[in-house]
Each structure stands twice: as structure tokens, then as C-alpha cells.
Image 1 (tube, rainbow over the protein chains, first blue to last red):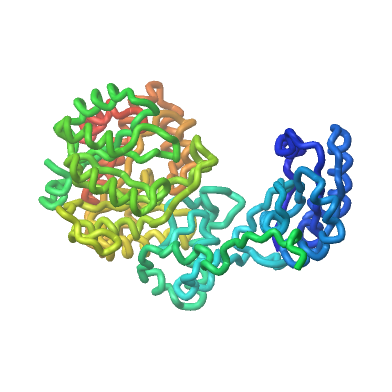
Image 2 (image 1 turned 30 degrees about the horizontal axis):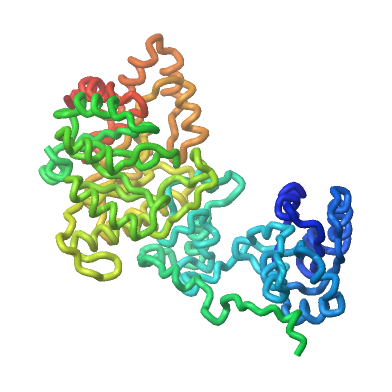
Length: 223
Length: 292
């Protein structure tokens, strides 16, 4: 699950400068539930664009744009319209836009900004988040992640910024390290606070080579 | 006397701090340096204090070395990754700077460049550990340095907290900082002698010098502002009353600071005066406290 918000229309118009015809693509997955790229938003965008004199060569909503094979198979019947457009405006998350870019040899424009989930996953509404750091520290921190619970992501303990248990960054936010302290106290493991965690290898947070993006324009490759 | 020598000789050490301005004008710092010379054992230079961009701690410390003072190079983890931190430590050493104070640093959104990317590649404990390694002649990657550093490593602690968890965490952090190489501590500003005594009862087991923080009060508004906005600072009502009744607020603020120093000095090994704009009045505070 990724969440997105629509970019300001003025920004989108800026992307389309010098282009007359655009093909609009929406996504029936996360963008639909974010109400940023489902059919209603695609139709609204179409109307806005036509209102300023742009021609909409066609539009489609696919579930899901992040699935490249699906993008190719669903766009194939619309290929003529896609190819006659100057560009594609894609109303979905960054993954979907990249997926479309990989499948269609046309300029693509993002119509949305993907909002950080800060490491939360799926539809889970709890506060537990994972940054996929590749070097889990939860053993030392009472099962509360210091990278996500602490605003600064400090690994060895609290800074001096907390007031009444709230973070210096926002009084709405609990100090992650006070929560860690509380949990460790409850489970009788305060001794873990003495354990020094050496500098982290951020390298492990980079995606593995096999996950890096591919370039194929499969829509035009009929075989 | 250098800070390290003062602390090792058992002298009650006096440090203060200067905050560089936004821009290239150093005339005020040079003037303050002249006034402080001979009155203090060390001068902290803040590192982009409150996450507000300004002249750096490194250049200012180098200027203080030139003026015959012993600077304490404050280094936050907020703005630099481990490559830049280590390189700036080498730079500092080359400029004759011998004290470093490792701190996390206020989050960028508290300052004037709120869109800045926060770094925290290292945290303050890891920075202390890194400086210690450089003192031993190695960088973080394990490479040998051609010419090692010789830094006197300091750390900070907040002695008064509003939650038990925070109080206990501060003590645990202190212990961890010592275990990786911290040699002295400077504290957040203290106004409550009893609260500081409670902290020292727990902290004296570490047997390391602790310099208690003092911020002279300038007004009632300032005291209330700190109570509401500065973590770990608690100005008691009786001091606020004293300021409210004072005809000469500045004189009373300095007297209160001097009185606090005298009431706290038997509990610890030194004082760290953060004058926040009143740097030129530091010699006067020391005189009032009979420390000049």
C-alpha cells in the first residue's frame, strides 16, 4: 500500500507545456483508495485539461499500474491512442509511474506525489513501522524500533530534547526512547541500555541490484 | 590554563560559550574573546545552535585559538555524515583545537532551514566512539591515520527531567558515553539546587568532571519562555518572583546566576555559563561569584 496526493493542477500544466495531446492513466489500486488516481479523479483531470484547451487522446484506469505485465496487456487495445498522445499523465504513486515509464516509450508525467509512510506497511493502522534497515536492532530496544520511533533515529539512546515525554520535533509525538525505556523496564531488561550500538551500515538500506529498475518498452514489442 | 589541565588538577573549572552570528562579521566574537581571556578555562562554540544556519563552530574555534583561548568545539550529528565529521575533526586538530563536545543537535524543523535533510548518520555516542578511535590513530573504516588526534572528549547531560524515564535515560546515556570515551560533561542549565543534588547523588559514581550549566536570567519573560519551550530547563517560581520584583533586572539576573554558582559549586567540578547574548557580562558574573 502506498499513499499519494494529487499534485496541484498548475504544476501538472507546467509539465504539459508545449504538448497538445495527453493520455491519462489512473490506478485502481492504492491510488484509487487514496482518491488520487481512480476513475473519478481521472475523469475530473480530463475535464480540467480540456477546460484549458488540452486534448485528451484517451484514458484508462488499470489495477494495478505497478504490475508491468498488466500495464502492457491492458494498454495494448488502446495502443493507437496512447501512441498518438504526446505524453502520458499518470495519476498514481511513484512505483506506478516508473512502471508505466518502463513499458511505454513516451514521456510520462506524475500527477501525484507519493507521501511517506515512514516505514509502515499495508493497511495496518498501528504505530509500528519498519525502515527495512537490514540490521535489526529490536533485541536491544525492547521491541520498539529506534529508527522509526525516535524522530532523529538515534540508535544508542535519547537526546536531551524531550519535554514531559514528548519529542522536541512535535509535542503531539511521544519520545520514542522514553517508550523504549518503559518497555525495557517492564520486561526487566534495562541492562540493554548499556549496550553500545556501533555506527550503522546504511549500505544495507540500498536496494539489491536485482531490484533496481529495468528498461523495457514492452507495449511496442508485439512478440 | 587549558580546560583539561584545569580539570585534571582538581581546579573548579570555568567554561562559557559563544554563539557565532549569521554572516562573516567576527568583530563581536573577537571582542568577547578579549574580555574572556584569562577569566575562563574553556570557551564552547555552538554548532548551528537551534538548527539556525550561521558561521561555523570550527572557524570560530580556530579564531579563539588564535586569541589565546582554549575552545571547546561543539559538534552536532545533525548536519554531517561520518566522512564530514571525521574530516572536520582532523581540520579542528590542525587548527589547534583540542576539546570536542559531541551532541545530537536540534532537529532541523526547530531552526530556520526547516526543509533541510537531517543526517544523524552517527548519534552522539557513536561520535564519541569515533573521536576516541581517532585519538587511537584510526578512522571509522579502520584505516590508520597519518598523525593521530589528541582530543579531550566532552558530552552533555540533562540533569533535571520531568519524567522518571527521561531522568533514568540521561543517566544511562551518561554511562554509555563514558564507556565509549567521554571524559567530561557539561549540563543543561540548572536553577534548582536540590534537583541537581539528586542528580549528582546518582552521577558521582562515574567519577568524571561535571560542569553545571548556568544561564543568567534576563527577564521574567525569558524564564517563562524557557520553562515552556526548553527541554530540561525549570526555573522555579521563587526566582521568577525575584526577577519580577527587581528594579534592575539585569543586575538581579547576574546576582541570581552568581548565587546559583555558589550554591552548586560544592556539588560538582566546574561551571559552564551560557550567557546567550550576555557574553560580555560573564567576567562580572564570575566576580560576583568570587571566581574571578
